[in-house]
Image (cartoon, rainbow, N blue to C red):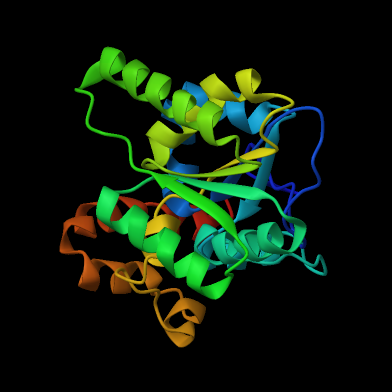
Amino acid sequence: MCFGAIPITEVASFPPPPGPECWIYLTLNAEIALSLPESPTLQKLARSPRARISVDGQWLWWALRRKYPGRDVRKLSGSDLIHVLAGHCAADGCRLLLLGSSAELNAQAVRQLQSRWPSLAVAGHAPAHCGQGEAGEREMHRKAMEVIAALRPDYVVLGLGAAKEQRFAWQCAGALDGKVRGLLCFGGAIDMASGVVRRAPALIQRVGLEGLYRVWQQPARLGRLLRVLRVLPMLARGAY
């Protein structure tokens, strides 16, 4: 099952089983799908045997159901899966690290998850600003890897922003083989797990208007929503 050139490997269950390699989990939404042609990192990630990719976003889920009638495919979004993962870690005694978002929202997300699963071993780290460009990003990667080495998590949820978290996962996964089971590119899931940024009500999600709800809460996202609307003609033509 594919959305364009992107294979959808995860259609029902979560989390994927552990293996010898640190896998990279990506929840595919319209914004990521549109960025594929100009993102070498995303292209490499999509083709990698490390990749575990599920469909996120109602529009893409509708499109895949039309493309593959009769196939059972679930919408597995990071905002939902972060809670599934926390429950899995609490039940299995695995350690979880939330890496990203702001220091305030990260800490609040850790508290919210611990209050729901008191036995959960969860820690958080919000990378400090390390300057712009490749040098700044390398420094952020170095500090994040130090945190991972110190905390020794089984799973790391990334909330660094789509492009940055994909680069971090692609560049660092090899060094985490045998140490971390999976890096999960979950975008704004840490923000939502904090409870400060609210998830859209189920009805708004089902009718495909979750993006508008996010803009209502965070007006700065309007430009991103307008760019994402470019996917609608492609979906209408079946060009995926």
